[in-house]
Structures are given as C-alpha cells and as structure tokens.
Length: 285
Image (tube, rainbow, N blue to C red; front, side, top):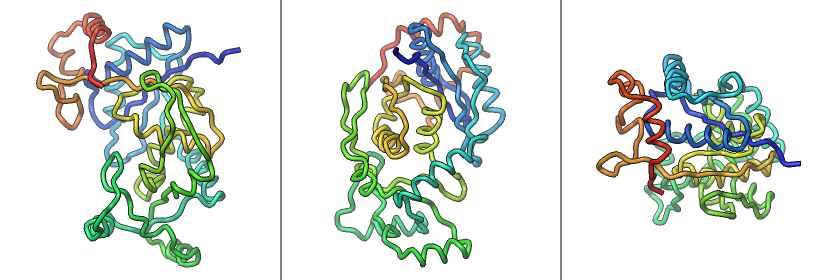
C-alpha cells in the first residue's frame, strides 16, 4: 500500500514572505491537493538572533490571504530542540561528529594561508583544523566552557553509509555526494541545531513524502540524504523547482528587498489572480 502524499512549506520567520515564497508554498500545496494528500506548515525558527514572532504572524496572514490552507497546526522547530539534541547524541555515539573550537577568523586565516583550499557549493570548505584533536583535550576544553560547534566528519560518515541516492522530480535518480560540503556544522552555541539536522529530523517525524523547495536548496540534499541514512530515517521524493526572478533577472530574495506579499496586499492586489499568475509562471532553473 502506497503511503499518503504529505508535503510541507517550511519558511524561516526572518522577514515577510515575497512572491518566491508564495510560488514554493503554492507548488507544495497544489501537489498535496492534487494527490489527495495533506499539506503541512512548519516554522523553522531555530535562529533566535533573526527570527521574530511578528514574522510568524505575517507568514500565517500571507498564506491565508492567498487561500492556501494546511491540515495540521503549524509545527515550530523552536519547541523541538530536545529531538535535535537526541539526533546529535546518536551521531556522537557513532563517533561521527567532533567539537570545533575555531572562530570564523581562524578558519578564514587558515583558508587564506592554503595554496589550494578546496571549495564546495557554498565556498571554501572547513579545513579540518579540529577534526583530529585528542579526545581528552576536547573534553577538557568543553568542560572549561569554551565555545564550540559540532561538525559532522563527512568523509567518515559517507564511508560508513556507503553509496546513497535520492529521487528528484527534475534531476531523476541522484547519487549523493555529501563530501562536497565538507564537515558541515550540525549545532553551535547560538543555535543548538542546524538547518541540515533539524529539517532531516522533522521531515521524517512529520511523515513528509514529498519535499517541494527551491532549486537553491538542491545541493543541501546531499547532506540531508547522508543524515537520513545515518539516523535510519526514510528518504522522501524531492521536487526542486526553479526560482522566480524580477524584471532584471535577479532571483527574488528577502536580502534583495523583493516586494513582500504584505505590500502587494496593501496595494490592493487580488490574491486569486495572483495565485493564478503564479500557477502559470515560468521559473528559472
């Protein structure tokens, strides 16, 4: 018996939604409705320095204005930190994570001094400064209260997991290559979990069968597929859609000051017409 189709929209409440968000939410919503499944809303509010309650209210207001409804109360990641800590503890027990005491300045200096620093999708990779520190030294520094992050030993983890794949609507069967991201951070002092760890745990906990998200997150799926394998979690189908652009061809983004749905609503936009326009939109890949 085939599992029910469950999709989700999972914004971070760090600003108001824009058309790019609406496009992604619409695609996830419509996929669920067309398949007789469920559509869920998850608020990814794990960054206390940037997330704001007023933006949570704005997300709900914007989606309701568009006429996109969800089938369960919104799930808030900030209420689930113990679950992410438990997942991290499992990885610690498998000797797949290590404490990293490096500051950003230390990492930047190490990369600058390297003649051939390896690069990944997001820029230079962490050079592994703390990867092989003695266990006793790490324990003493942690006990002394020294600030640290927890990094995934990606090469070791990938060796343990073996070959991995995921099914993507656009790309077909994709061979996961998590090592291209290097030793990613899974938790740090100011944010007790990372996007990578939290989204992997929550997609499994909510029974998400189909992940609909922008093409800009395609590369992150390499890490998510590895974490799924290590934690014994199911792998959903992925739908990495193209991204909307403005008149100048620039990708819509909060940081770029793209017009918000709230401002469109204030200007008298018709939500039904806007949603119809989005359903007919052509996004860049």
